[in-house]
Length: 125
Image (cartoon, rainbow, N blue to C red; front, side, top):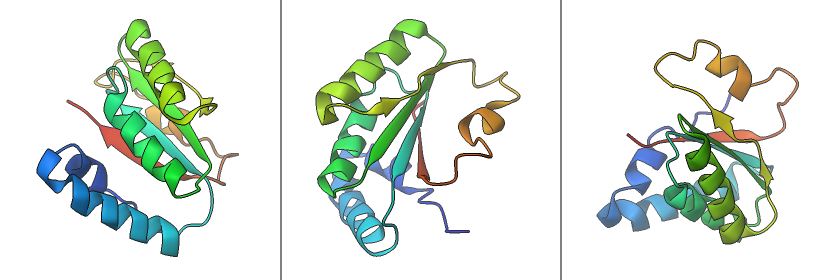
């Protein structure tokens, strides 16, 4: 199993580290992963940060999909629209739930029949 880009999203949200994260993401996805990427935005809010990440991945020629996840229907719908404005047509599966109480989140976000896309998980507190 490939090592997840676990710390990249946390760093991507810090302005001064954005360039370093961008270069690390570019190196990782150019060299190590040739397929599709699903960005899962936990606590996505309005989706602006995830949209920047999706734009970066699309700029690398990656097929992208997006799963915005938040506690509010208006937030996930806004995040979906923000992603579409950033990268155009994109497969998007919004999810409304409370992250603190959702016991089946892993099964929902990692279905057994979907192994073709790498998953890149972002988290906003």
